[in-house]
Image (cartoon, rainbow, N blue to C red; front, side, top):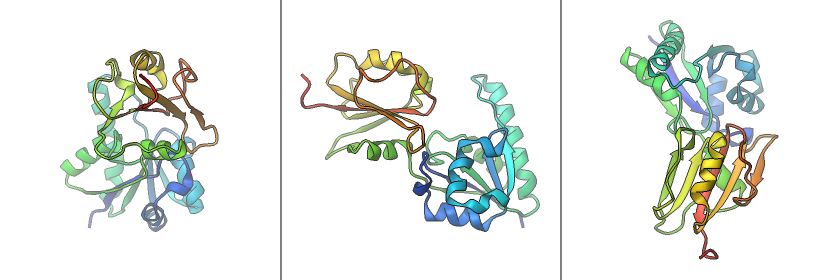
Amino acid sequence: MKGMLYGVGVGPGDPELLTLKAVRLIRENDVIAVPGENVRQTVAYQIAVQAVPELENKKLVPVYMPMTHDKEEMEKNHRKGALVLESFLEKGENVIFLTLGDPTIYSTFTYLQKIVEKDGFQTGLISGITSFCAAAARMNIPLTEWSEQLHIYPAAHGFEEKPEREGTYVLMKAGKKLDQIRKSFEDTKYEVRMIENCGMENERIYENLNEIPDNAGYYSLIIARKSENKK
């Protein structure tokens, strides 16, 4: 029988946010794949190993897919990564692919999943705590109330509009777009907060737009909500 590929969310940073199911699957399977060139240096591994120390002794498989905006190069890297995973699946070994946050939200795993399924293998998704839910909890604020809408943007790909929609805005991976984002929310009725490296040792929380620096780390997330105090 062929093995099964699981995309397992490890949450945003705090190892205590791994689900019981994620912990069980990591413990029960020998092949653990991680997106990166050096497994032990990846954020996903460093989070998971704190919750599952025996992970150190598993068969660790790096799946290196360098970030690029070149679509042809990206597809080539995804195909190469999928073939690495399939080499274990062909032998009947399950593969646990660790991914930050939740594997259904802007996850690299999605691209691998599509290729592996097309090649005839089975896959499964194990939910993890999303970065924006964890960020709201750390800042002790709700994301939505009553009938409010929630708008989620991959800010790394740009956010140029003024916030004209009703509801809460979540801007993920906003680090390199902060100047642009600040201009978008200036002179609006929104209270803007940002958390950098949520749940990690170097976590930082910025309580308003003026505190947010022009540049921050890749794992920076912004939550913007309408304020009743602003006119």
